[in-house]
Image (tube, rainbow, N blue to C red; front, side, top):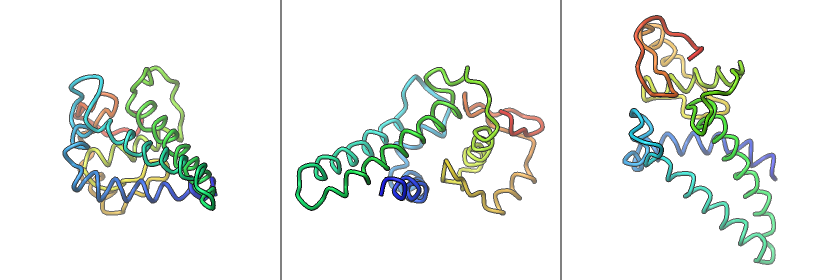
Length: 164
């Protein structure tokens, strides 16, 4: 159950990002699409919400007879959240000292896909297995003169590079 949950969380996170964060929860998530105004942003509330759900599942799974299967599900959600945080917040956006990490090709490719999300405020909404639609790739080809440094969220003009 742990592995299945971890794998399914990419689809759940992408859907949640698309329809909640870019929908009714935009008032929190908007801060993530703007230049940082300080160490924390309103978007940082989301991990507490998700952690609360996982903690609730751990509590129910360990205390309610017949619901022990919730424990590996909660563990899979927690592991996905940790991986998301390390890739997205620390590596890609350079938070918590991540600006000084050595560059890793596969993570840089995830960062390049996430840069498209910030640039066009569109797909890909997933993080660990981002699916970039052809229409977004085409938009990117048409507009390669600006890129966003995800670590500072500043727009740079010039030739686009995936090595930001």
